[in-house]
Image (tube, rainbow, N blue to C red):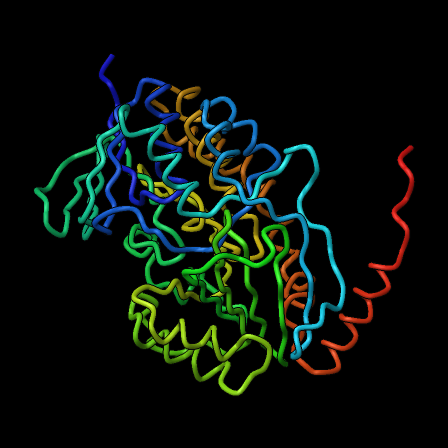
Length: 374
């Protein structure tokens, strides 16, 4: 039987994971990534639940444990630096890991690179499908034909745009933006995230394996025409949003101003009536993004394994494989798309009164005795 070819757009977390499992199932995957290499920026993400099982079956769990942060708590701090309370995060015993996103993507890439073709510095510009395959036009490389195409290219997916049209029909800005950057110095407390709030804004210093990373989350209506890859424009937005704040903000904003790279994006939700059309399907944030508060990296890993398994189980009936993948994975996605209001209210209260109420609740929780184990 002819070995089926699959083009995957995006070499973040979902794309290499899918390439690994498709190769395991006898497919011939190719991954195309518009960046010249893997990005080094991005916030730490959680690997939990089914994603831990997938990583274990891939043999990469030891590397993820090595890359994981040692964060066990989050403390809110006042403008003077006084800690208000501590919230435990993560689960004991290594059943859940927090891993820098760039490290997670690198581990998945290393697992797949000997099994799949990777093409960096190129992107898909046109797709034309018929009964027997998909003709793909690239920005720089020669046109090629594949049996299937999967868009794993994130919130701003080019494959999704070619398939379903402009993002305005299915991407909803949720009223917040996030920016992160490494600070270039050691974290004072390697086990605790420190967060300070202003009305509608939060800034945190996150320990990432001994180094400090800053994260800025702030409420804002959609900024029309913003290019999240325009570093200079994104830096200016952050500087204006936080100017005049207390705590460590002056020092942190100096770092923003001097940064060569800054991860910046909208907190958004993607909802589509279907995740595939013909021989082309979507995976990860391209299909069902709930950025920042949506457990996206774990869902990307489990979704990739689910899609590969569904395609392998349905032989040449790719349409049945896409349907089975979507039915199973939508059940995982739905709860995460409902939980964003709680997380947003906790991390980014919109008013001074909201900050005060949140801090009071944290103080009460911090004083509450831990229930005895059964």
